[in-house]
Length: 120
Image 1 (cartoon, helix red, strand yellow):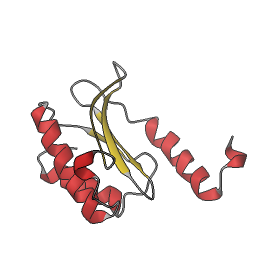
Image 2 (cartoon, one colour):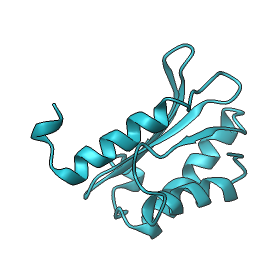
Image 3 (cartoon, helix red, strand yellow):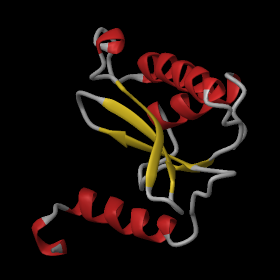
Image 4 (spheres, helix red, strand yellow):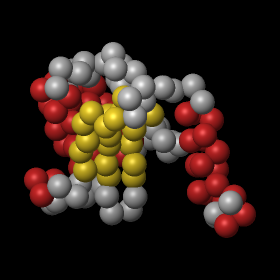
């Protein structure tokens, strides 16, 4: 499986596996995971005990269709995610960067979610 991936994707997959060994979402503190591509950015809040997605947000939704997957777009997406989590009475999460480096778009989304009142 690893031979078909290029070096960059293979390294991200190894980081992802290493991170997921220690990060686990519960009902009291669900896991916030981020997925990034060149065209889109999405995030999910997952309760791993039940295997259930509690909340999600994506640039594919109509209200965020005009955003670009840069730091400004990620910040707006993070603010909206924080509001959705507050509406569902979720105040603390575990952040899963999904193997991506904590820099740029990923950092902007995390910081905006924190500013919305969600504790990591």
